Image (cartoon, rainbow, N blue to C red; front, side):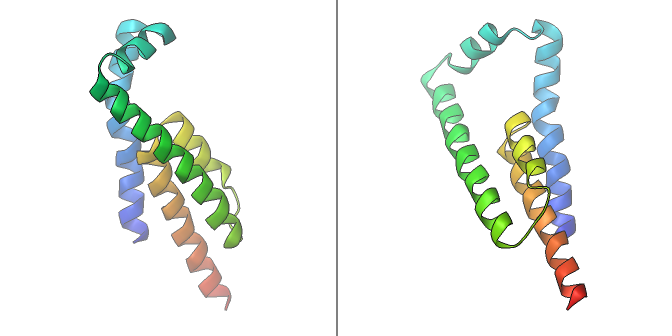
Length: 108
């Protein structure tokens, strides 16, 4: 599973940014235009609100499950979720959790 999560972490970074970087290059860091385009239609608002709720749930899950398992560096997947999205933050957390589990098994 570690490799599966690792590949999805890479894809979760590359795919969203493959769309964002060209937009950024074309429009610059125009926050007003970004918000206008995000809320341009009901369906895009639906999608973004879904992503926001998923990100909040994911951050709660990262904090709860990560602390419960004694994981360190939980800020990496949280920052990844806030800067890239759930598509990056979730597989990154699961990847780090697999590595943490492997290390704990080696110690026992």
